[in-house]
Image (tube, rainbow, N blue to C red; front, side, top):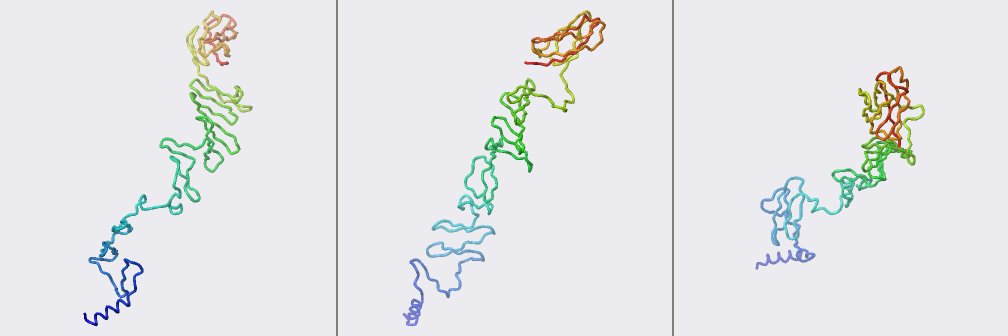
Length: 302
């Protein structure tokens, strides 16, 4: 071997640092570039074998470098949120800050994270999580509250006074106040009651009702007739002293009010209106001179 070449190689070996560990390759600082065929700006160089390099061509903006695994080539691509991300995205970074939730619950924003609200949505109904939960209306002091019974809801003021709406099983519904003074709606009618007292009043002192309308039938039939309504007009035949009205609303304890609707020479007033189960009989003071119309109002009683 030429002595000059040998001397140069020995000098290089003496000047080159020893690798820190096995498998490392020392690249002298004097090497200014590493060239791979076809390279362009933005390409990345990676080892494609234990003895060679190749390039990873650059791609469009917004892609990230993704590891292909140990011993495999890397690639460009989008970060998969279900496969490439670990941990919980923080609330301040647009995440929920939470890792578990209650099925069907609607989320609510908190100071530092989202959390389950008290409202559940099963795809059909919105449900409050507890019967004591209140739903406030706007910025005022009125709120809705679920009642202890099925179908019951309260509309309350912050002072504790409430109006409750209730639809019990088999009934059309109830409207009442905090002390359970109620109006009951059903297929058979409307009735009122109070808590512990079946008596209730319509109106109050100095505040009356403007009008009262009752279902009524004004008949042209002379003599016995069927009128199953709370009010009506029957006709007592000439020379008769009474008329029988068949009325399914009548009971033995019902109250009947009656008055003449014409002036008669002999029958001057109504003597009585007697009720029984299914009928009422109106009797005048004397036999009527002519056909005599008479009105009645029936008030039921237990």
